[in-house]
Image (cartoon, rainbow, N blue to C red):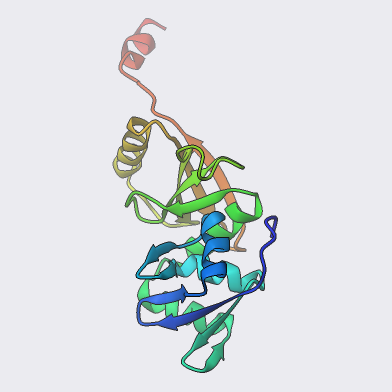
Length: 185
């Protein structure tokens, strides 16, 4: 993990993993983790999975410490795309980016340029697809169009069968004159 943080303790309840220690909350929030609510910092499932994976968080359910596999099972029961989100999130964090929940395009994240979290708006919107999953071209076009209107760069993260993440930048293209150009050729 490129950003050094102390190991923190989290607690699991029906709403997910939260941290209620003031120092730990400040440390995590400063680095782009979680959302504050009622004197607690709630982590998205993929954030908690990442912190456990990186050995930066211990999670208690009641009085028992749970393992990463237990949290994966909990997350998958809540969201079938939890593993895909985790793989993308882990990859982005390992590259030094801060990723926050996206704008509702499915598996998507607002991604801040390196060192820009808290200072500037997100630069990218990354949305994920598992290798082999089909998506309609019209739907992809709509995603890119909406993201472009927000003045953000559209990135597709494709999860290969081995869990590697490959990124593709997408941009709007206007093909209006293509027919005229082809007819004149």
